[in-house]
Amino acid sequence: MIMISKFHQNILTSINLETVKHNIDNISRTKAYQNIYINHKEIKWAFLASMVSRNAGWNMTDLQLEPLKTFLSKKVKSNLFATYERANWLIFSDAYPQLLLYESSKKFGEPLFHLLPYFHVSKFMQKEWCYFWKSQDHNRLVTALIINEQNVIQKPVIQQPFFKKKVFHGYQYLIQDFFHMSAVLFPTVHGKVYGSYVHDFSNLTKRISLGKKLASLMFHPDYYPDFYTFAKVSEPIGSRYEYEQYFTTPSAKTPMLRALYPIITHKDKIRKDWYISGSSLKKRWWKPVHPHFSQDVSHRFYAKRHGLLAIQNMASAYQATKVDKKP
Picture 1: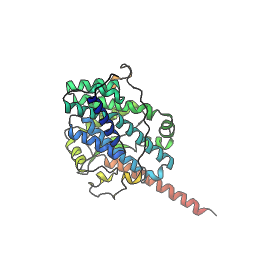
Picture 2: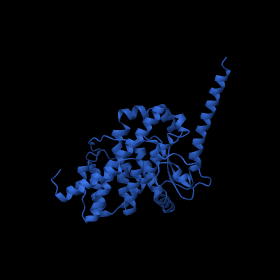
Picture 3: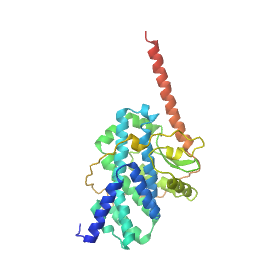
Picture 4: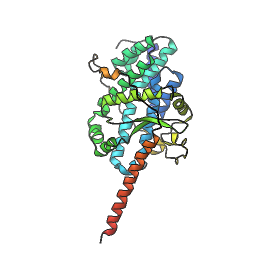
């Protein structure tokens, strides 16, 4: 890396401090992404990231509520929380400095992307930010950031031996995956919820495809205004009550994320650049998706959960009858 001026060093220091400040937990990340989008609407990925981050918070809280509280063992819940937290922490530590450096570039009227290597950002994104500065191709930048961030977590989280063995190859996770129990949901203040189910999360290409599908839904002109309104008026608390309050029959308030989990301290390692001279970039990752979204998916999502709860209740009742029959 080249020597830099005091002016540039001050920018780096400020961005580092801001990144650490907002990478404390899921809620602070959600707010930080959303604020970037509010101030820079051309950075569409920031809004997508904020809503996906909300979903991560809801999933974390769900681990401590029925039916998952009983269905999953204490160890599995702990490992799943660690997976959500580590993946989202890593993505934020990589992506947020990029967003702040773009913000500084706008502020000072000159591209500052030559500073990206100081944040260990991939050469892939260094090229993409330079291209975006000239072209203002908003949609390409969304796809580029989706590709980059999913690659960022592939080795440190998805293929990391602990997570690979304890989470992604664990039978309780595989059952959840088989029954499509997880989904990324985009709610509205009208009580409708749209989204897509998460399947085979350990597959990099499928995660990228899901990200593109979600981006296509989020910025569809028929839906975007409602999603943005929801985000603006609904304070992130890491609980599904954020959107369940808008249902015709609101659900009972559930515990907030910060009441369930402590702040987690992460150790960062200098990440190897996943992008090696273009050979690691697959052409299909760039292909646009045109999914059809036309109905509220909340009924399907909650039907699956109620079904699992019913199975649990039946199993508990069966165990109780076996105990009663003992001499």
